[in-house]
Image (cartoon, rainbow, N blue to C red; front, side, top):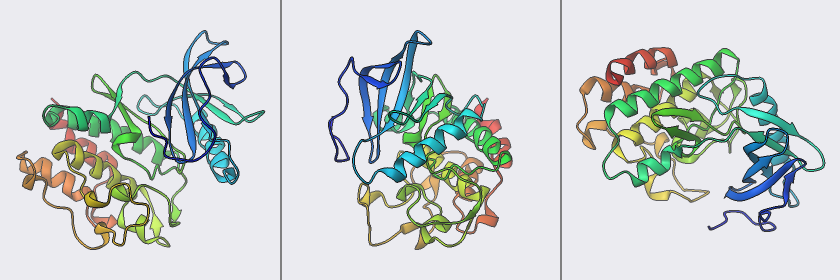
Length: 277
């Protein structure tokens, strides 16, 4: 497995990721965090431990992790990953429930054909439900993307609330390029519920077509010269896949450059219901 960030190697199996949580295997390393499959002595079951990569200059990531864990501990929704515990000493960690599905990005990449419309509609309904709940609690997710969604037998859960925060002025650098709304990319503008609706739209576009709506050619670059969502509209869904016109239009409305023209999460949810069966 290739590691995306510098730092000491991941902890070996058998070591402690946090007190009472013994490493079974290392699952993933992102720019700032290691994720481990661990065994909980207290619960006598497997859990997931998310910990900062131990290195200098990672203080901001530690603060984000602790904030994410604290937020998840006070949320309770079937389509949002559950946090069991937030550990601050001797090593910060957030203990999460084990999810047995696959990430949506994996499903899109490995499926022999594009995902069935019914599955995509159900996925969208689950995302709308979770996002509506977050918004009711004054929180924006701001990083909705296929790799932050796990699906098991058609049941979706959102992961990674590390940059989630209340609505307000945008700060540059938050989010993932290909899925960021124009107001996120620009920085300085106001972010609101419509920003997350854009994220849902980008996810649904990719789930339906197998293509990201923006910046496909610069995936993996940290500082692209252009941000396509500032320069053009999303291509029509039906230019990539023949789907019902009303479904295509619903997804395209989520990707309107003007946040005021996007549907609310519940409106989007109701629009998807006829396609879910």
